[in-house]
Image (cartoon, rainbow, N blue to C red; front, top):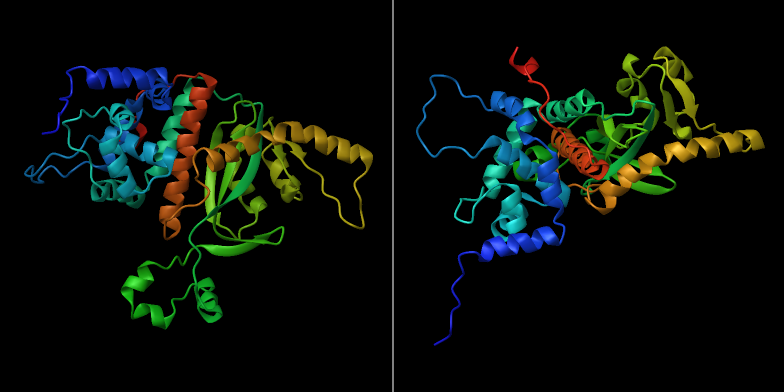
Length: 353
């Protein structure tokens, strides 16, 4: 008969202590963020009518479920993988404040929670809530803003040219209508584009980044075919007046918009085969690059650490939610790097009004 070593009373405690000594990144993330600042927004979103039945199993804590989505975004895990990893990993359980005996949310529960946030349009509100807390604590440097965009690819569609033409015109091919299961797997919002002779299919994450802290101030999501500069006026505002605006040469020709909002134009100058840049212009571009290049660190973290530049979603709404969670998760991790604690410094009442 095999010897079975029963688990000791303090085995889990010692394992967690060991994980802490090995610098579990979730320990710092949990300590630096006051997660309760998100509770009013989440409670309002999931508020039940007064006459609704209270029968059935009580729902999981909403703040815990939101933390789960941040964890999922940080490690780019599917719903099924998320359920498994929470069940398997002590570090995940500790981050979510779950005991070993607690029930773990299954993949369907995770999906339903995220879908509710998407349908109610709450992801952007949660991003703004976090940034408001940062702003109240004067974390943003507000000395300059960097504009840039990056592709976020989705699974490529194997469509015929005729089908692609119909989709681009906002129509649905007849052959898809008769096959609901196939139609559900077709992303009719993503688009193809080329950059440097490389084809991309999916969406674009347009971000405005604080030059001093490398925190994302604001973002928009478009399909991949939208030019970077088209989202400039959507992202900048009169609150940015007096600050420098850094961007690569893709934003050349937006002087009117930049001046309209009172920003100082630090966009790279662009030359061509007929009008080469002078040495002075090249030197100016190099100097601007010293600041503009900081935005590459943002996308570098998303690419290398979060594996977030390829997502498996279908449709603009879900892609926007996924990208929004990526931007929010990045900001949280950046606060840990900056050693900036985010506390609940004011009451969030605007959504209740």
